[in-house]
Image (cartoon, rainbow, N blue to C red; front, side, top):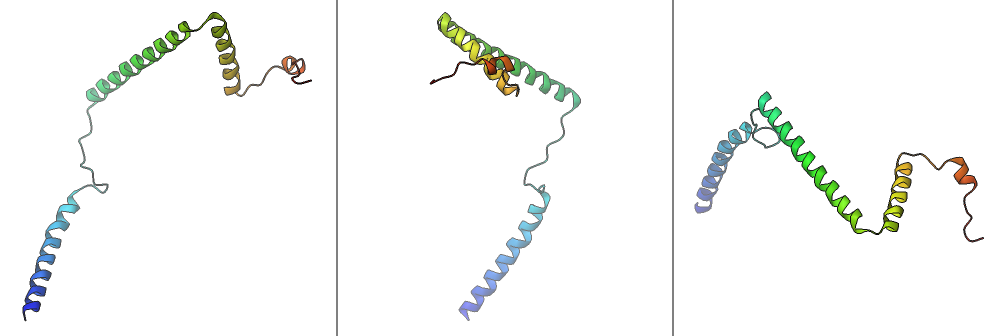
Length: 110
């Protein structure tokens, strides 16, 4: 008799918790996030302006770092860096070397 009372109480509590938790879950959005109100046009403008300023600032910092690094190098190294930069730009644009450079290239190892 004692175990049957426990079973009845357990089933009752389980059913009550399920009944009260289902409506709470139904109120949330499907992906579990609370829906926020859409930003106004002015807010979007402010956000875009802030984003542009941040982007500009980051670009300037990056440019300053690059120039500082270049300034530390010797003249010969800067020249070599410039040559390789141009070569990499050509490769990244999917343009090969001109035909006359390919024809008259120095052969290595011969």
